[in-house]
Image (cartoon, rainbow, N blue to C red; front, side, top):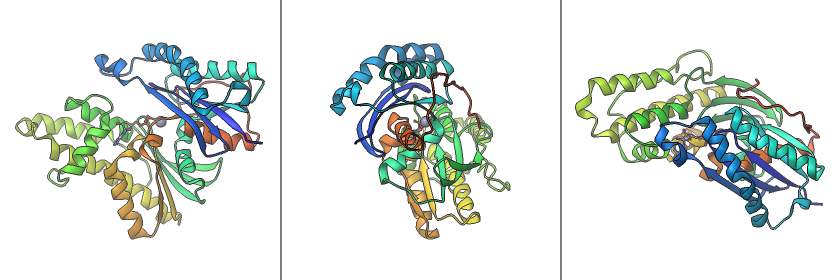
Length: 333
Ligand code: KG4
Ligand code: ZN
């Protein structure tokens, strides 16, 4: 019998619905981004995000079922991200998920959105050998996992202030680029020399795997104040800035791989869509004789397929939830 899961992700400003067969066959993976709805406010407005999720979630589920050529009766479990993110936004997804699970009399499986990002690589490759060092570079979180098996991992590093994606988006905004700033900065990083300006590589030498990017953001603010005559040539400035981000992510990740003697590295999250980041990680992986895994860009940024994939492993392991599933704005570990 084929097992089919329907997954929902509404943690931030994307409404995403996926339908997955088994652990890696994507039958549908639809994401509606709200970037344009929040543009005039210069950032995501939580209440507006909730309202937008509510508006689009039902039609999106229907569209996903149509694309997957299945009906509600074919679904074996409902997966939903219940953390971390905007509470009001998560609540929409979780309420819809609970209603579906209750009315269809099938299991409900809550998923940690950040823990789900590396599962984009399980979708891409079918399997990744363990142990692995898993770097998640998303908009709101930068995390380094030492993963020994499914559900058996330790978070060995995390952003202590701004996440890498947050820093990239804020710096892009300083230069007048709308959200998300990553793709534009990545284009500059590929086109322009990255060693013209010297931006700090924060906490590179500290004796842990944590990340701190708010100092880099402040360095850019200061640079802009003292170098106003150079700001119309933003290519080399933003390329040098992005090199700092990539250098920190790369050095910490490979440092962990070496120290823990782990030969598999997986990278995921929105920033993993960056060509510059992928190139740098590939070069280093070759040098260090490490196996590198990253998903295609569509599975790097937020999507419900990765959420449903993690839930597929949980479904198999009988890690099911009930209608009391709670929601959390912050990571619970
Ligand atoms: O994983 P994600 O979609 O959302 C969160 O879970 O937060 O990550 C969004 C982040 C943003 O900072 C965005 O600028 C960045 O990923 N991003 C990129 C690219 N696409 C998205 N950064 C660099 N290059 C890209 N192609
Ligand atoms: Zn994410």
